[in-house]
Length: 263
Length: 323
Image 1: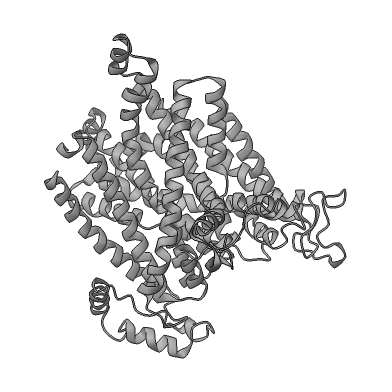
Image 2: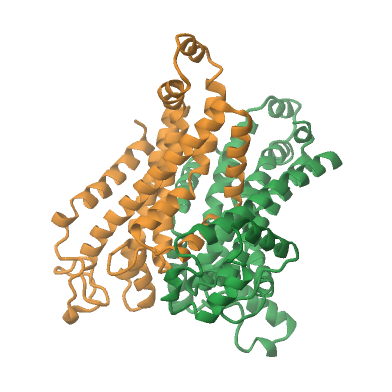
């Protein structure tokens, strides 16, 4: 394991543990309003301070880690499934299927992703499930391109001919031989995609069309932080730093994997 | 070159067709259809507005007729009228586009200038302390949430120090300024938005530039250039840079959708009346004609951006046309 990967794993694991153990780590109920303690700075009682409803910022951030992780991982899982399926179909069968699928990829890439996501949210409601689905459905194109390119070269290799000579069907060849062998660059792409998904979710929540309050997410805490700018620095500093470090973690992990697997 | 150009131009026709299909599908197949049952209880969409959209899109006709009619109107640049103020969508978008494109162009130039310098200087000093600190900077750039950076700069530079304005693109007394003052005024308003918009893209370009340059510096023709006694400066800036710079054009083209998409964020934060903010406001108001219009135009702009990048690449690199 190289340095980049190690620091990536460390950061990712740190936030994953916080997310999983949130109820045990958070000292307060993240929704507990305390009118007597509005916008108090970091102290021994509230280590990261309180927000404009007197809720404990640290507890809200801990639960916010859950949202980020959940949205990031599930969105990328959706993108991965779509991208791997379409990419391997295009690469393996070629011909018109390749043309249709790759043209579809080209078209999807024309849309500014953020516009597409906003437009769909305008039609659906901004729930966590919808956000995960929308991010997933708009970020599979890179994976599809990568896996197609890998399979194009892999399918001409001897072991694939041997497998076919032994009577293996298309489905078996694709799922048991081609996809596993093509996964290295895809894994890098998917790890980086988690970072991108977390950034998109927090941007959406910040703009008020992502995770809706009172459910805490780093993005919507920052949105509140904007409205109390100048009066409560902790409302802007901590959630921003959390997003920054988490995204950095997945990026480091992705680049670390790239260095290890592809060089 | 003419044949290449022609081939590329014909190639965008199916893509434009696809863009309209997807936009049409999004607006029609999503459960919250503009005239659907949900909208009846949505106070943001009035009865009149629903009737207007039903008429506009001919929702009583079969789906393919609706699509064909819509595309026919698109070809005449008729995007319908906005629900919010009944103005033609095309007019609303047209007055916003120059602002968004201007900011994006400025940030692209900034990205190119700074990104290329960082990339080249890192590659030349590969493995040095400078190179490693630039790598750290690049990683930080990748991970920085644009809106957080915008907020921090707004808070520190705009509010605490009070050096730069933090909202809009011109001062209230803009009309009374002389020409020179007007230019300065706009520049001061756009400094933060352009910087924020450029920051994210900077990381990508400088990293890409660095790896290109490292690769080029190991080529035989660079060794030849050094062997024939050229000054190191000429080797790097005349021989290596030219070759390493080429693929950056394509990457810059590919970054267009990200830049345009990102405009939603910084235009909302800095209250800039551009296309991103128009889109955001339309989404909040469920102004479907404007949403569809911006989607189609945004995608078309991206398509043209990529085409332009490819053509300029082909213009400077003769190998491309042969493929």
